[in-house]
Length: 417
Image (cartoon, rainbow, N blue to C red; front, side):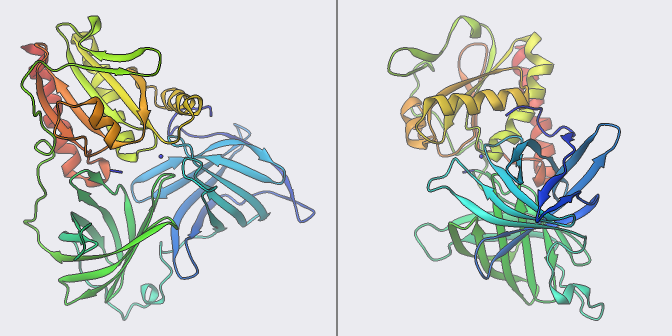
Protein backbone atom coordinates (compact mmCIF):
# COMPACT_ATOMS: atom_id res chain seq x y z
CA UNK A 1 0.00 0.00 0.00
CA UNK A 2 0.16 3.23 -0.58
CA UNK A 3 5.86 7.15 6.04
CA UNK A 4 17.21 11.15 13.88
CA UNK A 5 19.07 8.86 15.88
CA UNK A 6 18.22 5.57 17.63
CA UNK A 7 17.22 1.93 16.90
CA UNK A 8 13.81 0.98 15.56
CA UNK A 9 11.13 0.00 18.08
CA UNK A 10 13.63 -0.55 20.89
CA UNK A 11 12.83 0.54 24.41
CA UNK A 12 13.25 4.28 24.35
CA UNK A 13 14.96 5.95 27.22
CA UNK A 14 14.13 9.65 27.14
CA UNK A 15 16.05 12.06 29.26
CA UNK A 16 13.87 12.88 32.24
CA UNK A 17 12.47 16.35 31.98
CA UNK A 18 10.76 18.98 34.01
CA UNK A 19 9.39 21.66 31.72
CA UNK A 20 7.77 24.93 32.54
CA UNK A 21 4.04 24.95 31.80
CA UNK A 22 1.74 27.64 33.07
CA UNK A 23 4.42 28.63 35.56
CA UNK A 24 4.73 25.16 37.20
CA UNK A 25 7.13 22.26 36.74
CA UNK A 26 5.33 19.26 35.23
CA UNK A 27 6.20 15.63 35.86
CA UNK A 28 4.09 13.23 33.81
CA UNK A 29 2.22 10.39 35.54
CA UNK A 30 3.29 6.80 34.86
CA UNK A 31 0.66 4.47 33.39
CA UNK A 32 -1.91 4.22 30.63
CA UNK A 33 -2.93 7.31 28.69
CA UNK A 34 -5.53 7.98 26.00
CA UNK A 35 -4.63 9.89 22.86
CA UNK A 36 -6.88 11.44 20.25
CA UNK A 37 -6.22 13.02 16.85
CA UNK A 38 -8.84 15.63 15.99
CA UNK A 39 -9.46 15.01 12.29
CA UNK A 40 -12.49 17.32 12.22
CA UNK A 41 -15.18 18.60 14.55
CA UNK A 42 -17.10 15.33 14.24
CA UNK A 43 -14.27 12.85 13.69
CA UNK A 44 -11.79 12.03 16.42
CA UNK A 45 -9.28 9.19 16.11
CA UNK A 46 -8.40 7.53 19.44
CA UNK A 47 -5.19 5.66 20.23
CA UNK A 48 -3.57 4.23 23.35
CA UNK A 49 -0.36 5.46 24.95
CA UNK A 50 1.83 4.13 27.76
CA UNK A 51 4.26 6.31 29.71
CA UNK A 52 6.71 4.96 32.27
CA UNK A 53 9.46 6.72 34.21
CA UNK A 54 12.65 4.65 34.32
CA UNK A 55 14.34 5.64 37.57
CA UNK A 56 17.52 3.61 37.07
CA UNK A 57 17.97 4.94 33.55
CA UNK A 58 16.98 8.51 34.46
CA UNK A 59 14.55 8.44 31.57
CA UNK A 60 11.02 7.81 30.40
CA UNK A 61 9.52 5.26 28.02
CA UNK A 62 6.71 6.52 25.71
CA UNK A 63 4.77 4.05 23.54
CA UNK A 64 1.85 4.15 21.13
CA UNK A 65 -0.25 0.96 21.22
CA UNK A 66 -2.45 -0.43 18.41
CA UNK A 67 -3.67 -3.88 19.41
CA UNK A 68 -0.57 -6.12 19.29
CA UNK A 69 1.57 -3.29 17.91
CA UNK A 70 3.83 -1.53 20.41
CA UNK A 71 5.70 1.51 19.04
CA UNK A 72 8.46 3.05 21.15
CA UNK A 73 8.75 6.74 20.27
CA UNK A 74 12.06 8.54 20.03
CA UNK A 75 12.75 11.68 22.05
CA UNK A 76 14.16 14.31 19.72
CA UNK A 77 14.48 17.19 22.13
CA UNK A 78 12.70 20.06 23.86
CA UNK A 79 11.40 22.93 21.74
CA UNK A 80 10.63 25.86 24.02
CA UNK A 81 8.02 24.46 26.43
CA UNK A 82 7.14 21.42 24.31
CA UNK A 83 8.66 18.03 23.63
CA UNK A 84 9.22 16.35 20.28
CA UNK A 85 8.66 12.60 19.91
CA UNK A 86 9.52 10.93 16.60
CA UNK A 87 8.02 7.77 15.17
CA UNK A 88 10.94 5.39 14.67
CA UNK A 89 10.49 4.34 11.04
CA UNK A 90 8.99 7.49 9.52
CA UNK A 91 9.75 11.20 9.21
CA UNK A 92 6.73 12.08 11.36
CA UNK A 93 6.54 13.27 14.96
CA UNK A 94 4.41 14.49 17.84
CA UNK A 95 5.07 17.96 19.24
CA UNK A 96 3.38 18.18 22.64
CA UNK A 97 3.14 20.68 25.46
CA UNK A 98 2.57 19.30 28.99
CA UNK A 99 -0.22 21.44 30.43
CA UNK A 100 -0.27 19.46 33.67
CA UNK A 101 0.96 16.08 34.86
CA UNK A 102 -2.05 14.34 33.30
CA UNK A 103 -2.47 16.22 29.99
CA UNK A 104 -0.45 16.89 26.83
CA UNK A 105 -1.62 19.00 23.89
CA UNK A 106 -0.07 19.63 20.50
CA UNK A 107 0.07 18.19 17.01
CA UNK A 108 1.01 15.19 14.94
CA UNK A 109 3.18 16.53 12.11
CA UNK A 110 3.90 14.79 8.81
CA UNK A 111 6.59 16.78 6.96
CA UNK A 112 6.47 14.43 3.95
CA UNK A 113 3.07 15.89 3.02
CA UNK A 114 2.49 19.33 1.56
CA UNK A 115 1.22 22.50 3.25
CA UNK A 116 2.67 21.95 6.73
CA UNK A 117 0.43 18.91 7.32
CA UNK A 118 -0.46 18.62 11.00
CA UNK A 119 -3.38 17.32 13.05
CA UNK A 120 -4.28 18.52 16.57
CA UNK A 121 -3.50 15.92 19.23
CA UNK A 122 -4.53 15.61 22.88
CA UNK A 123 -3.19 12.92 25.25
CA UNK A 124 -4.64 12.51 28.75
CA UNK A 125 -3.88 10.19 31.64
CA UNK A 126 -6.31 7.32 32.13
CA UNK A 127 -7.49 4.04 30.64
CA UNK A 128 -10.67 2.58 29.26
CA UNK A 129 -12.15 1.40 26.00
CA UNK A 130 -10.46 2.58 22.84
CA UNK A 131 -13.67 4.35 21.80
CA UNK A 132 -15.69 6.10 24.51
CA UNK A 133 -19.18 5.11 23.38
CA UNK A 134 -21.78 4.99 26.22
CA UNK A 135 -23.11 1.58 25.10
CA UNK A 136 -19.70 -0.01 25.71
CA UNK A 137 -20.17 0.43 29.45
CA UNK A 138 -23.77 -0.81 29.68
CA UNK A 139 -23.86 -4.50 30.52
CA UNK A 140 -27.47 -4.79 29.39
CA UNK A 141 -26.51 -3.95 25.78
CA UNK A 142 -25.05 -7.01 24.04
CA UNK A 143 -22.54 -6.36 21.24
CA UNK A 144 -23.20 -7.84 17.83
CA UNK A 145 -20.78 -10.58 16.73
CA UNK A 146 -18.72 -9.65 13.66
CA UNK A 147 -15.79 -12.07 14.07
CA UNK A 148 -14.63 -13.58 10.79
CA UNK A 149 -14.06 -12.40 7.23
CA UNK A 150 -15.97 -9.66 5.44
CA UNK A 151 -16.03 -8.99 1.70
CA UNK A 152 -15.41 -5.24 1.67
CA UNK A 153 -15.80 -2.54 -0.98
CA UNK A 154 -14.29 0.92 -0.61
CA UNK A 155 -15.90 3.73 -2.62
CA UNK A 156 -18.73 1.44 -3.82
CA UNK A 157 -20.46 2.40 -7.05
CA UNK A 158 -17.63 4.68 -8.26
CA UNK A 159 -14.84 4.32 -10.82
CA UNK A 160 -12.38 4.19 -7.91
CA UNK A 161 -14.14 1.26 -6.23
CA UNK A 162 -11.74 -1.32 -4.74
CA UNK A 163 -12.06 -4.60 -2.89
CA UNK A 164 -10.62 -5.71 0.43
CA UNK A 165 -11.04 -8.52 2.92
CA UNK A 166 -11.87 -7.40 6.45
CA UNK A 167 -10.65 -9.93 9.00
CA UNK A 168 -11.70 -9.40 12.62
CA UNK A 169 -11.29 -11.07 15.98
CA UNK A 170 -13.72 -10.20 18.75
CA UNK A 171 -13.69 -10.47 22.53
CA UNK A 172 -17.03 -9.26 23.86
CA UNK A 173 -17.11 -5.63 22.60
CA UNK A 174 -13.39 -5.34 21.79
CA UNK A 175 -12.34 -5.79 18.16
CA UNK A 176 -8.95 -6.24 16.49
CA UNK A 177 -8.01 -7.06 12.92
CA UNK A 178 -7.26 -5.40 9.60
CA UNK A 179 -8.26 -5.04 5.97
CA UNK A 180 -6.28 -6.96 3.36
CA UNK A 181 -6.10 -5.48 -0.13
CA UNK A 182 -4.36 -6.65 -3.27
CA UNK A 183 -1.49 -4.25 -2.53
CA UNK A 184 -1.05 -4.62 1.24
CA UNK A 185 -2.92 -4.36 4.52
CA UNK A 186 -4.18 -1.64 6.84
CA UNK A 187 -1.91 -2.92 9.63
CA UNK A 188 -3.07 -3.16 13.25
CA UNK A 189 -6.64 -1.95 13.68
CA UNK A 190 -8.25 -1.90 17.11
CA UNK A 191 -11.66 -0.79 18.30
CA UNK A 192 -15.06 -1.64 19.67
CA UNK A 193 -18.47 -2.86 18.62
CA UNK A 194 -21.92 -2.16 20.07
CA UNK A 195 -25.29 -3.73 19.24
CA UNK A 196 -25.36 -1.88 15.92
CA UNK A 197 -22.11 0.08 15.43
CA UNK A 198 -18.44 -0.58 14.68
CA UNK A 199 -15.48 1.69 15.47
CA UNK A 200 -11.86 1.00 14.46
CA UNK A 201 -8.66 3.02 14.38
CA UNK A 202 -4.91 2.83 14.03
CA UNK A 203 -2.17 5.43 14.41
CA UNK A 204 1.39 4.33 13.68
CA UNK A 205 3.08 7.52 12.54
CA UNK A 206 2.26 6.93 8.89
CA UNK A 207 -1.33 5.71 8.98
CA UNK A 208 -3.98 7.71 10.81
CA UNK A 209 -7.03 5.58 10.00
CA UNK A 210 -10.52 5.84 11.45
CA UNK A 211 -13.51 3.64 10.60
CA UNK A 212 -17.07 4.31 11.74
CA UNK A 213 -19.95 2.11 10.59
CA UNK A 214 -23.43 0.77 11.22
CA UNK A 215 -24.18 -2.96 11.24
CA UNK A 216 -27.43 -4.45 9.97
CA UNK A 217 -28.71 -7.95 10.74
CA UNK A 218 -25.22 -9.19 11.67
CA UNK A 219 -24.37 -9.45 7.99
CA UNK A 220 -24.04 -5.98 6.42
CA UNK A 221 -21.73 -3.11 7.39
CA UNK A 222 -21.93 0.41 5.96
CA UNK A 223 -19.80 3.33 7.06
CA UNK A 224 -17.15 5.98 6.55
CA UNK A 225 -13.37 5.59 6.36
CA UNK A 226 -11.08 8.53 7.21
CA UNK A 227 -7.38 8.74 6.36
CA UNK A 228 -5.99 11.64 8.36
CA UNK A 229 -7.77 14.95 7.81
CA UNK A 230 -7.28 14.96 4.04
CA UNK A 231 -9.36 12.07 2.71
CA UNK A 232 -12.45 10.00 3.43
CA UNK A 233 -14.73 7.60 1.60
CA UNK A 234 -17.72 5.30 2.01
CA UNK A 235 -17.28 1.57 2.55
CA UNK A 236 -19.56 -1.44 2.77
CA UNK A 237 -18.99 -5.06 3.75
CA UNK A 238 -20.87 -8.36 3.78
CA UNK A 239 -20.00 -11.45 5.83
CA UNK A 240 -18.20 -13.92 3.55
CA UNK A 241 -15.70 -16.34 5.09
CA UNK A 242 -14.84 -17.81 1.67
CA UNK A 243 -13.91 -14.48 0.02
CA UNK A 244 -10.37 -14.28 -1.40
CA UNK A 245 -8.48 -11.54 -3.21
CA UNK A 246 -6.34 -12.04 -6.31
CA UNK A 247 -3.10 -13.79 -5.34
CA UNK A 248 -0.30 -11.22 -4.91
CA UNK A 249 2.12 -13.30 -7.01
CA UNK A 250 -0.08 -12.91 -10.11
CA UNK A 251 -0.69 -9.14 -10.20
CA UNK A 252 2.70 -7.99 -11.51
CA UNK A 253 4.37 -9.99 -14.28
CA UNK A 254 6.97 -9.92 -17.05
CA UNK A 255 5.80 -8.78 -20.47
CA UNK A 256 9.14 -9.41 -22.23
CA UNK A 257 11.04 -12.68 -22.45
CA UNK A 258 14.55 -11.31 -22.96
CA UNK A 259 17.03 -11.65 -20.05
CA UNK A 260 16.04 -9.54 -17.05
CA UNK A 261 18.19 -6.41 -16.76
CA UNK A 262 17.69 -2.91 -15.41
CA UNK A 263 19.75 0.24 -15.15
CA UNK A 264 18.69 3.18 -12.98
CA UNK A 265 20.43 6.51 -13.59
CA UNK A 266 20.37 9.99 -12.16
CA UNK A 267 21.63 13.10 -13.97
CA UNK A 268 25.30 12.15 -13.69
CA UNK A 269 25.71 8.42 -13.10
CA UNK A 270 24.31 4.93 -13.00
CA UNK A 271 23.10 4.40 -9.42
CA UNK A 272 22.03 0.78 -9.74
CA UNK A 273 22.07 -1.96 -12.32
CA UNK A 274 21.25 -5.63 -12.52
CA UNK A 275 23.01 -7.90 -13.19
CA UNK A 276 26.29 -6.80 -11.63
CA UNK A 277 29.45 -8.41 -10.28
CA UNK A 278 27.95 -8.85 -6.83
CA UNK A 279 24.91 -10.73 -8.12
CA UNK A 280 26.69 -13.41 -10.17
CA UNK A 281 25.48 -16.89 -9.19
CA UNK A 282 23.40 -15.34 -6.39
CA UNK A 283 19.73 -15.41 -5.48
CA UNK A 284 18.62 -11.76 -5.56
CA UNK A 285 15.60 -9.89 -4.20
CA UNK A 286 14.90 -6.44 -5.61
CA UNK A 287 12.63 -4.60 -3.17
CA UNK A 288 10.79 -1.69 -4.81
CA UNK A 289 9.82 0.39 -1.78
CA UNK A 290 9.84 3.68 0.10
CA UNK A 291 10.87 4.57 3.64
CA UNK A 292 7.48 6.33 4.10
CA UNK A 293 5.53 3.12 3.48
CA UNK A 294 4.35 1.03 6.49
CA UNK A 295 3.88 -2.15 4.43
CA UNK A 296 7.43 -1.65 3.10
CA UNK A 297 8.65 -1.38 6.70
CA UNK A 298 7.00 -4.70 7.55
CA UNK A 299 8.58 -6.29 4.48
CA UNK A 300 12.00 -4.80 5.35
CA UNK A 301 11.86 -6.44 8.77
CA UNK A 302 11.16 -9.81 7.14
CA UNK A 303 13.92 -9.29 4.54
CA UNK A 304 16.32 -8.38 7.34
CA UNK A 305 15.71 -11.82 8.86
CA UNK A 306 16.12 -13.51 5.47
CA UNK A 307 19.36 -11.63 4.81
CA UNK A 308 20.82 -12.53 8.19
CA UNK A 309 20.01 -16.22 7.66
CA UNK A 310 20.94 -16.67 4.02
CA UNK A 311 23.38 -13.98 2.89
CA UNK A 312 26.32 -16.27 3.62
CA UNK A 313 24.62 -18.93 1.46
CA UNK A 314 24.31 -16.61 -1.54
CA UNK A 315 21.33 -14.28 -0.99
CA UNK A 316 21.57 -10.61 -1.98
CA UNK A 317 18.84 -8.02 -1.34
CA UNK A 318 18.62 -4.46 -2.64
CA UNK A 319 16.09 -1.90 -1.43
CA UNK A 320 15.30 0.50 -4.27
CA UNK A 321 13.78 3.53 -2.55
CA UNK A 322 11.23 5.84 -4.16
CA UNK A 323 10.95 8.77 -1.75
CA UNK A 324 8.50 11.59 -1.07
CA UNK A 325 9.48 15.13 -2.00
CA UNK A 326 12.01 16.38 -4.54
CA UNK A 327 14.96 17.40 -2.34
CA UNK A 328 17.59 14.69 -2.93
CA UNK A 329 19.49 15.63 0.22
CA UNK A 330 16.37 15.16 2.35
CA UNK A 331 15.52 11.91 0.56
CA UNK A 332 18.99 10.51 1.20
CA UNK A 333 18.84 11.58 4.85
CA UNK A 334 15.55 9.72 5.30
CA UNK A 335 17.10 6.59 3.83
CA UNK A 336 20.15 6.96 6.08
CA UNK A 337 17.90 7.33 9.13
CA UNK A 338 15.87 4.30 8.04
CA UNK A 339 19.04 2.22 7.74
CA UNK A 340 20.35 3.46 11.10
CA UNK A 341 17.14 2.48 12.89
CA UNK A 342 16.25 -0.69 10.98
CA UNK A 343 19.81 -2.05 10.66
CA UNK A 344 18.71 -4.32 7.80
CA UNK A 345 22.19 -5.37 6.70
CA UNK A 346 21.41 -5.07 2.99
CA UNK A 347 21.80 -2.02 0.74
CA UNK A 348 19.22 0.71 0.16
CA UNK A 349 19.55 2.96 -2.90
CA UNK A 350 17.68 6.16 -3.74
CA UNK A 351 15.97 5.29 -7.04
CA UNK A 352 13.85 8.43 -7.41
CA UNK A 353 10.69 10.15 -6.24
CA UNK A 354 7.70 8.27 -4.82
CA UNK A 355 5.95 7.54 -8.10
CA UNK A 356 4.65 4.21 -9.36
CA UNK A 357 4.88 5.72 -12.85
CA UNK A 358 8.61 6.35 -12.42
CA UNK A 359 9.14 2.87 -11.00
CA UNK A 360 7.26 1.43 -13.99
CA UNK A 361 9.58 3.39 -16.29
CA UNK A 362 12.59 1.85 -14.57
CA UNK A 363 11.08 -1.65 -14.80
CA UNK A 364 9.78 -1.56 -18.37
CA UNK A 365 9.79 -5.33 -18.67
CA UNK A 366 6.89 -5.51 -16.17
CA UNK A 367 3.22 -4.90 -16.93
CA UNK A 368 3.36 -2.18 -14.26
CA UNK A 369 4.58 -1.40 -10.77
CA UNK A 370 1.21 -1.12 -9.04
CA UNK A 371 2.31 -1.09 -5.41
CA UNK A 372 4.98 -0.11 -2.95
CA UNK A 373 6.35 -2.57 -1.99
CA UNK A 374 6.89 -4.95 -4.89
CA UNK A 375 9.48 -7.72 -4.50
CA UNK A 376 11.20 -9.32 -7.52
CA UNK A 377 12.89 -12.64 -6.68
CA UNK A 378 15.60 -13.71 -9.13
CA UNK A 379 17.35 -17.07 -9.29
CA UNK A 380 21.06 -17.84 -9.68
CA UNK A 381 20.53 -18.08 -13.44
CA UNK A 382 19.41 -14.45 -13.57
CA UNK A 383 15.80 -15.31 -14.37
CA UNK A 384 12.83 -13.88 -12.47
CA UNK A 385 11.24 -16.64 -10.39
CA UNK A 386 8.52 -14.69 -8.62
CA UNK A 387 7.10 -11.16 -8.33
CA UNK A 388 5.17 -10.40 -5.15
CA UNK A 389 2.95 -7.32 -5.13
CA UNK A 390 2.34 -5.55 -1.81
CA UNK A 391 2.94 -7.08 1.59
CA UNK A 392 0.53 -8.38 4.20
CA UNK A 393 2.27 -7.82 7.52
CA UNK A 394 1.92 -9.18 11.06
CA UNK A 395 -1.46 -7.47 11.53
CA UNK A 396 -2.95 -10.05 9.14
CA UNK A 397 -2.24 -13.02 11.42
CA UNK A 398 -2.10 -16.36 9.58
CA UNK A 399 -1.83 -14.66 6.18
CA UNK A 400 1.47 -13.21 7.35
CA UNK A 401 2.86 -16.31 9.08
CA UNK A 402 1.99 -18.56 6.13
CA UNK A 403 3.62 -16.16 3.66
CA UNK A 404 6.78 -15.90 5.78
CA UNK A 405 7.09 -19.68 6.04
CA UNK A 406 6.39 -20.32 2.34
CA UNK A 407 8.75 -17.58 1.11
CA UNK A 408 11.62 -18.75 3.29
CA UNK A 409 11.17 -22.29 1.96
CA UNK A 410 11.16 -20.89 -1.59
CA UNK A 411 14.39 -18.95 -1.00
CA UNK A 412 16.02 -22.06 0.44
CA UNK A 413 15.09 -24.05 -2.67
CA UNK A 414 16.57 -21.37 -4.98
CA UNK A 415 19.81 -21.31 -3.01
CA UNK A 416 20.14 -25.07 -3.26
CA UNK A 417 19.71 -25.16 -7.07
